[in-house]
Length: 225
Image (cartoon, rainbow, N blue to C red; front, side, top):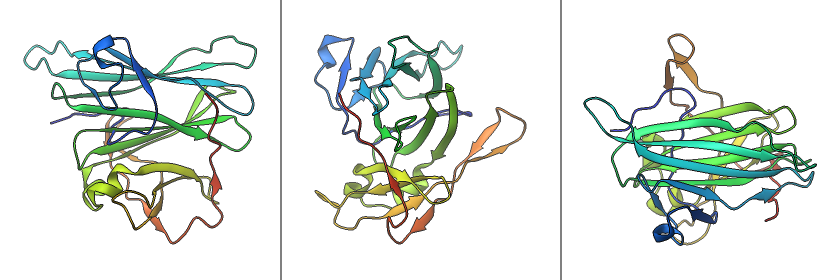
């Protein structure tokens, strides 16, 4: 069973291109926990910020567990080519060889915010989304959805989940694409998670608000490689 505290991320399927430090997994679409390092290709926003999402996994060195720990870092390069301080935001502890999928889904209109989608485990998996402001180098929203959410979707639709954009309320909109085995697109507005206990305590899963359409939603910029 995976354990998670604040700022932890999870994944299901990935449309992003990954490359791995381990040559044996360089062409894999699904990276398994324990592979070592892997990262997305760099994506560039319309304002010329470049984002790369890096994953590191390995032994958690727990005294009685020795589970596989996965950790995520967002590396931003400014338009002038200088590097911002790396932002390490996600860790999950669980079974070795579990699937780890992560990607950059795009940028806000105007190119100052980057949006990260991560899912972990076989269907039904858990999901987390991150919205990060690149000018200030600060997290805007980090939202966790547990397996109860994806269990309510078909396997095909769960595999097509992605961040579509931002709602009128300024909140992340998650949805499914009508393609492949998913014929019924759905959309949800995500609210920030509540925390059980003091800061850094247990994250309570969010219950997304179902949207009838993408009306009023500002779609993400795809970015460029």
